[in-house]
Length: 129
Figure 1 (cartoon, rainbow, N blue to C red):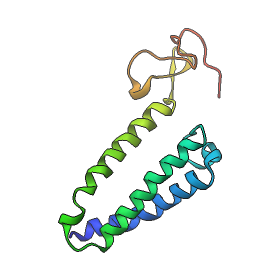
Figure 2 (tube, one colour; figure 1 turned 180 degrees about the vertical axis):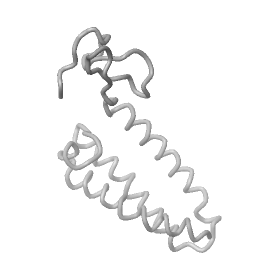
Figure 3 (tube, rainbow, N blue to C red; figure 1 turned 90 degrees about the vertical axis):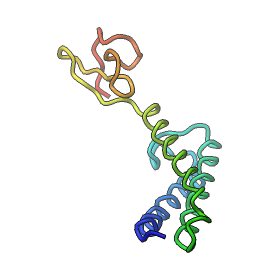
Figure 4 (cartoon, helix red, strand yellow; figure 1 turned 30 degrees about the vertical axis):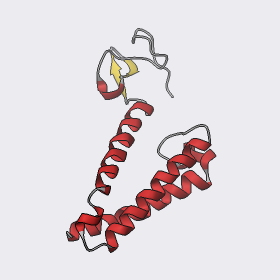
């Protein structure tokens, strides 16, 4: 198996385990400890199981000598990555822009007309957060 795959697996495992601990042990603290706020508290605990499963998979990647045994697991990894990126872009507010001297934010992906916090067009001034 490729050395690069093993090294990357070794680097990923601690991050997955840290995410598991944060989400499972401190599910009510996601606003402070995680990338975004997750409510209700059972949801981060379920997500934590996916991170723990990912850590288990990458430990197996580190130990396995035959690519054929672990190759199908990378499909799950790719799907989780796509889901995480998509969730992050939909849950996180878009960066603020300045339009005609007013601070506004754009829709996810920067498409469409600028919006203010309540979703209305950027005809009103956006208060500083």
